Length: 551
Ligand SMILES: [Zn+2]
Image (cartoon, rainbow, N blue to C red):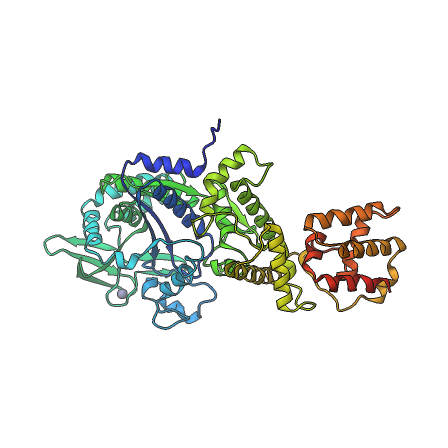
């Protein structure tokens, strides 16, 4: 019946074709500054594959390589200006500008990885600077040196193809006469110089097999050095570094951004090097489109970023997992914090579909939810829908501090949750989550909420508003008071009741009828959906407020 196949199922199929019982899923990130949430696209893809494959009984390793061994080309604006002296130095060797005892790379890497637990991520973390110290990597470098002609041929063929004739010639010249191996100068600690944007790396110029020594030239010191290969601080140029790591870790699958995964790009070149030079098949390629922030690409060096920590201040990790996992990697995602309520509504629908509580769900939707929903949750042990305070309520509760004390707000919030989920009591952990939700909503309202979500309840109704009320509007208020005094409603019931009250009043249009209530409570013509809004307020306070409009 169902012929649809989801992106993740296709990826899993490709991986299984490799016919290996130990599966290695790899991901990596250069640490040149604060890291934005874009990296989660790659990490959630990896983590989803891991979960599915582990469930199928495979032994899965999930690595996240922090590329701390790259040399600094430039620094973002939030880094002190005197850091320019470190340009050309690997990030692993640069001190952190904000903490003692850590390197630049460690500081920003920790800022990212310290959020992993909250997002349900648990990869094994590897550092490039440390990988390059291992005897295995030293041997790979020896292989690269030995087979340098083969590598040059591959690079000239694939990279050269993308260049015009002149640049291709220059590239060819650049490749010949030196090895694709960069060196951290033992005297000045630099791996490259950057002059007016032009990068000149310190390359290995010669290898002396008899003594296992490399000869290199440092452009900063303007001096030639000779060192034992084992002692020299070497790093393969990045088009070779990538396949070298695949071979070192025996990577089965690695996602990468569209810039590298285009046909003939660095990924394909890497695969050729991996096969022809190292004799290893290389990973299954998954290319993905960017995760953008609104309409802009996030760029570490330009300071256009939205970090995982900033995200956690306003939303649950599941929402981001959902957005990323439900969107096929071939499509770009624009994360817009102002649309958070909409994302949450979508997610909660997806959740109901999974738990078979959404009668209008299509077969496709059901299929998608069955496969993908479990991948969206942080703790992969799913029991049932978790009672939680809907965000639309949290938004309101977070703004009622002026008229209700915190205990009353929390008590109202619990009532709402009990009613929605038809549960008699709220557990300790559910209560914690209710508080957390209100806190996130408060931050969201402060930083990102569109005007119509903002509530500002005045202590009393202005005389202007009172005098402007028509007889019909006064009738609305009276009838709403009556309704509220009658008993308990769900938000839907209350919304419908008010709608019907307004409709029955002759000569009053519906919009104006609703505006009446907003004017009396908020002093403006609009606000959050009335059903949930009124239920969030203390009933006695609300009735008194409505009554005072009639005096
Ligand atoms: Zn030097």
